[in-house]
Length: 410
Image 1 (cartoon, rainbow, N blue to C red):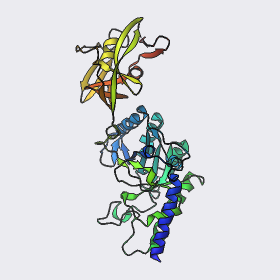
Image 2: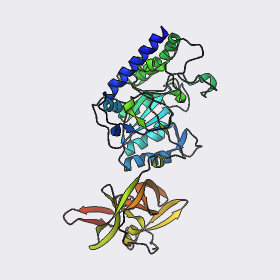
Image 3: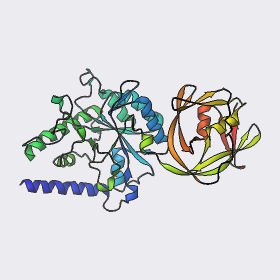
Image 4: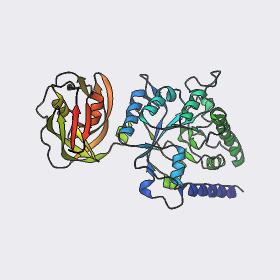
């Protein structure tokens, strides 16, 4: 009987996976994406493997925005796998585990600012109710509801109460952890115990977000999986699940047990997703105060990137002048200050193709960070001219008829 049940479970999982993946129609190159894993955020408190600063999260989201990544939610993955929607050119999935209040107070505003979307899996027994009953560091149901109704946050389950509560929420040496079976536990007892917890979690989410709330996503506590849990996923309409294994997800293999990258202070998104690109030397024609200037630039992916010092030299003596310095590993800019040249400004570029590495450089403008897309080319930070204009207070317009950029500094 046990063998038959295992075969039945495998058959159900295979059928669900085939349906979700649209058979063999999916192309390998189109079906991979990085899934990012976050937990808690802090303004200036202690950081660790589960907590990063709000500033770092903003840098991460700005990197995704500046380099054209499209954030996906669980429903998007289901549609893509079924062939109802195409995978975007640069997909990414942003996830949070547990349901910390900082996801709402610190993370949610940044998601809105940058146009990103995230999926938050809740330990539903921890979420605080109207009487403030729950874990003090967790969000409230009102906060979860506001994020869900915004359309940019999906809510999933991280179980109701399967986080080793009796052990303070820590992993047990040798297990069982999360949804793993207990020693000597029968198939039926496992399905009852774990199934009831998952059903309770889903019902609790729907009771607080609305009966029409769809719960499609599950993240494994401690990343601990169990073959018997597959039946619970199918029975409860949880079509997407993630672990803590570090790798790029490939949804050709289904939407269950997808790996994720844990983002820490030591591993920001800009490092994880950093890529090299060929930078082709070109010359941008720029008009400044009626004077035409040839501005050296590197073309990458159809966009021109210019050296910060070249722009500083170009604008020196105008209302938009600024100085360039270096402090604590960051490029610093002081608006309105006189620029001190170093002799490299506006020099012709070598016509050989160069290699550039992507980054979001936290420029310090008048002591405040301004996150801009950049490429490090031959040791120089190069930026889009329009991005510099937005950050430093000058305007860039394009005269298409004459193929020239018009800079306005007043």
